[in-house]
Amino acid sequence: MAKVQSHSYSDDAPGLAARRLAAALIDEVLRAGTALDETFERMAATAGLEPADAGLARAIATVAFRRLGTIRRVIDARLERGSPRKSGPFEPIMVAAAAQLLFLDVPDHAAVDLAIRQLHEDARSARYTSLANAVLRRLAREREAILAELDPLTDTPDWLRESWTQTYGPDVAMAIAAAHAEEPPLDLTVKSDAVGWAGKLDGIVLPTGSVRLRAREAVTGLPGFTEGEWWVQDAAAALPAQLLNVRPGERVADLCAAPGGKTVQLAQAGGQVVAVDRSGPRLRRLKANLERLGLSAEIVTADVTTFEAEPFDAVLLDAPCSATGTIRRHPDVAWTKRPEDVDKLAALQARLLDQAARLTKPGGRLIYCTCSLERAEGEAQIEAFLARNDGFARDPIKPEEIGGRAEALTAEGELRTLPHQLAGETPRLSGWAGFYACRLIRS
Image (cartoon, rainbow, N blue to C red; front, side, top):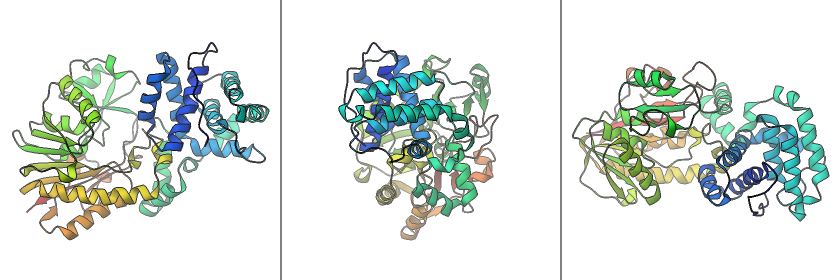
């Protein structure tokens, strides 16, 4: 995909700067394999857009990645000779425009006209404006027919579809893909009184204790944010720290801790927490969250594989992973990760797990977890670990520890949440992230 040329984002055509930023985001993420969130933060900081325009750019890019397989398919089907070569920013501009026409509440004329304006700005794409205009107007005319034939698996790259089908079966693979097509819910972990906060925030108390908000609002303006009464955390992501069962005064290590949701949980439980991560900027965000919430932890900037300390009563390792369990919230993950990434990460996870084991004192607890749907980063990782570490054994998780959700446990008593589980009032208020966790005891 060609690089979108940089422009001044202040422009007198309403909405053009937002569309430029959206196309640039799509292009950058696909070319460089960077995360959409981080790319947006960096590019939006220099774009100088009004918050509404920046928000629109992000919304366009997000839905473009959520439906990228469908968008590419319908565009290609209407290009007799396929996408033109050496056409500069043609493809990201077309993807952004199609995302608006098919999946966002944007006037058709605005999506089409502003895309044509962008194409005119680059000599390589300018010669294809007539073609683009015809294709985009056809998409607008045929929108209802296109939407009637949507197949969620179209928006799942082949390697992931094959992986999920092999691991979970074709029906579950389809259910996971269908869950990813929905906007994600917003979950909170509260310090106390989940029922009370659900009432104040128009939320639902989930079986596991998280509060899920019905409305989508800026969290910083909600009651309790400034006072530090709660923090944003996916309901599935909140489970591993709960399952560590930290008791007041215990020494606890949170390895690969940033951005810190689990650190906060462990500190709230009364643990003397040491939060270790190699990323200074991400640890600064963790520190800010602790301060807002009125909690404390020792923060250490270090590579976990070489971190040394006296063994801990309890250790939580949330290992770096492919993050395929978070595709609903981060749809770019599906298009930036590759099978070889899983292999590389699995090798790193094994090293981290061995180090976490060394940091767990005899009789202590160790939880290993990843936000991945890939067996190589979950079940297979633990099987290999136990085969080379006879001093550890599984401590099976019981259904009552996770709100009675027995469907989220494996036969061995490991946690395996899937995105289509946890039915709610509506599809958007259903589901949770895909997470794996195993609780181990050192003999």
